[in-house]
Amino acid sequence: MPTADHRPTETVPAGTAGTVREPHALDPELAARLALLDTAALSDALDSLGITGVLPGVAARVPGAVAFGPAWTVRYRPVGEATGFRNAADYLDEVPAGSVVVVDNAGSTDCTNWGSLLTGVAQAAGVRGTVLHGSARDVREIRAAGYPLFSTGVTMVSGKNRVQLDRTQVELTVGGTAVAPGDLVFADDNGALVVPRARLAEVVARAENVERTEARIRAAVAGGSRLDEARAAFRYDRPWEDAHGGRAAEEAVADAGH
Image (cartoon, rainbow, N blue to C red; front, side, top):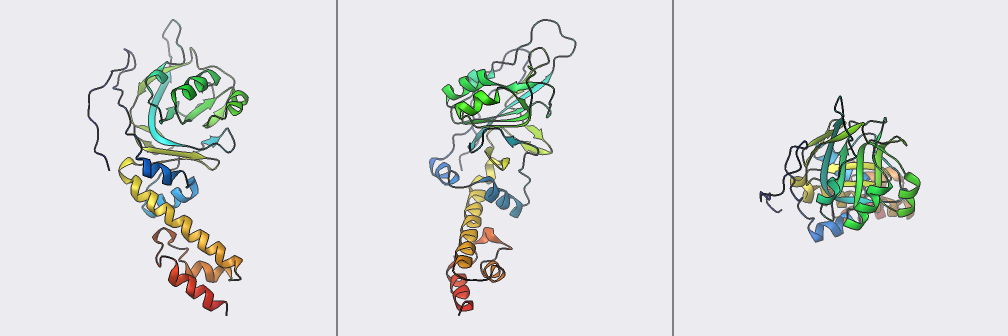
């Protein structure tokens, strides 16, 4: 795994204290393997390691869309008593291609943090998707654009003059789950989860084993095995281990069918 990158980078404007750091790019081989997985297999792999990864309440707004990539984090705060115009923030100019933007507005359904304008900018910049602990709007246009958008809410009310950018590239807490810049975010029709960067290769390997185990169980049942026998033979209780590499279990299922 690559080591942490501590190169100095641009500081965000006054009022948004924090330092912007580019997330690590995904290893191409890992990215190709991730493209064959889904949140269900990854969730099982995280469970096997005792890692909480789900981002509670986050739902897909564009059916069928999938997003995965390093998290680029954004936190909002209420405008409060400040006077003068407060826009929805221009942080997208700093987000590297291949990232998934993760926005924390405390799960608010009172106003939005994402719409069609930001979607167009994100797509042009090569951003791979957006996960909002908060609300979005312009959902019809975003669906038409095919942009992977996931959020805890939808409303038409603008965030302008209601919330403002607090910090970027800081650790967030979404429903009790930590999201650090550079962690792997994966979202699909099931919802969204995060994998700690340091555990990514291990989680991917276990998720692949989960997929193989379930495929073998399905094949055994299709071949005439009882479901309980197939599950026992292929260790459905510990699918992330791929304990027998498939061969011994396949022979046991075949013998049970005779």
